[in-house]
Length: 321
Image (cartoon, rainbow, N blue to C red):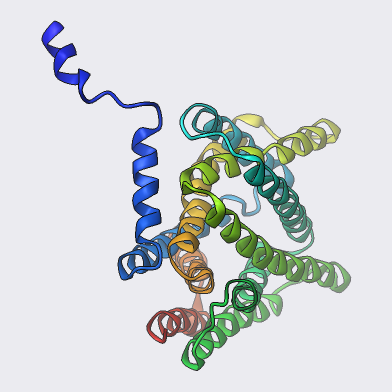
């Protein structure tokens, strides 16, 4: 045992040392071709994870309870990393995190209201189609990241394809027209807030000396609100759902959220915010394939064409820069 102790004595590091070294390396490659390649990979992985995240929220449970279960696990999983691994935030980062709490609470409430009034297949494309278009404009204003004319063609293909998917899905809805309109209005508001939080979070992670510090504290502090709302809503239900499956769904959702939201945040730290936002919205294509191959949903030639248009738009944005 003494020999083992001596062998590892020189390798002992302070808590979080490996994380800090990785964070420093990521900061060092930001803005470089290597960073751009990694940002592209992270944005696409985030898109796949977000499609899975959306599928987890589909239909079976009240959207407020589902999001509450996910956020409760996000708090529990992020707390040890935030409190004991990464450094505590300084005063500037505290104020940035307070702003993130407000922005993300507004987004989560908006999405829950949209899902209450319209189907997942209507809400999701409207939100994801509106978000990148507004984000690209915001990135131009706040980060001086300007798209080429060819990239704007790509944005038009991607957002147009996604919104046409929404129109196609709306034509199949049998909801009361007033309820559907309210759902669409909340979905449009959700798309706008996607752009707001993407731009704001990109600013926040760029202010942090270590991106993992921002990520850990971001997931920890922005996840306090919905578990409380969900608990209040659960107690007021006349026929509350069985908690066991909901808890497990929340755990899976929290793990996927770390990959989905963490991946796109890291991508905005390494490369252009607008490009990361556009690539992330290929989640609509991944979501359609999940529905097709796993959930047994019909795609059809029109949806297949529109999905191809979305994917083509992402390729044009990536290659046209």
